[in-house]
Structures are given as C-alpha cells and as structure tokens.
Length: 177
Image 1: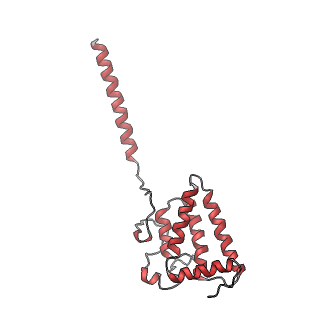
Image 2: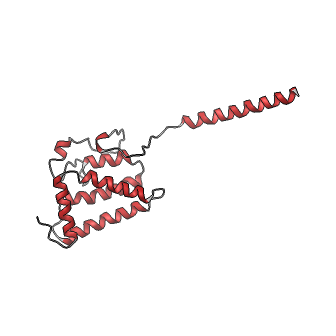
C-alpha cells in the first residue's frame, strides 16, 4: 500500500512539474497586446521603424483639405500612423493604405469629372474587396475597419463637403455647390 501511495505521489509531482514547465515556456515568449476596440488616432504609440511619418499637429493637419503628408505617398500622416498602430499584418496594412490613398485622393485632388470620380471609386472598391477576403477576418471586422478609416479620413466639415461633392459626381451630377 505504501508503494502505491509513493508511486501516485511521484506521478502527481511529475504531472505538476510538466504543467508548471509548460506554463513557464508559454509565458517566456514575447506577448503581443491586441485590443478588442481599435484605438483612435490620438493614441499613437509606435516604436516601429517602418519609415513612419512624425505625428502631425492636429490643428495644422486639419487646416487644409489634404492635411499633412510628409511621406509623399498620398496618405495623410495621421491616417498612416493609425493604420500601422492598429493593424499588425502586412496584408491588412497594405489594403488599408490602398483604401486610404483612394479616399485621400478625393481630398487632395478632388475629381473634376464623373469619370475621374468613378476611377477613384473603383480603386477603393478593389481594395475593399481584397479586405473582405483576408483569411481570418470576418465581414463585420472588415466593415469596422472600413468605417474607422472613413471616420478618420473625413473628419472635418471641409473634408465632408468634398466627399459629398465626390458622391454627387459618382451619381452623375456636376459636383458643384
């Protein structure tokens, strides 16, 4: 009987040791924090060396229709930083940057004709379609990403007016006030 008790105690110690070892190994890797809700543009905490632009002054950034684009890639610096902060995969970043560039095109170079507006819209839709087929991304997550991008990009009265003129062009109107 004593031998059985010793054997069970030894098994318990082994199981406990294995569980403890697995727990320590699992916690020794780099932990990545991924918030449930995406952070707003004012909470940029990047340490990434991806040739990111500096954080723009909000007043100067919102003073013009196009905003500040120090990188020259056709995307406002605050939008660029927000994408890199909130999305860690290259696929999501690339697609969102493409979508942001199309929306920014409406602000930086407002389309003058219906054809120009439709070309911008097509490039946006192509990128949005790619976002919907990203592996592991649900349709609701893709829609949320799209919504956040619009809210961030069209964030002033002047930008909203430009976007509404663009929508009027898409519908065949002349886009004037």
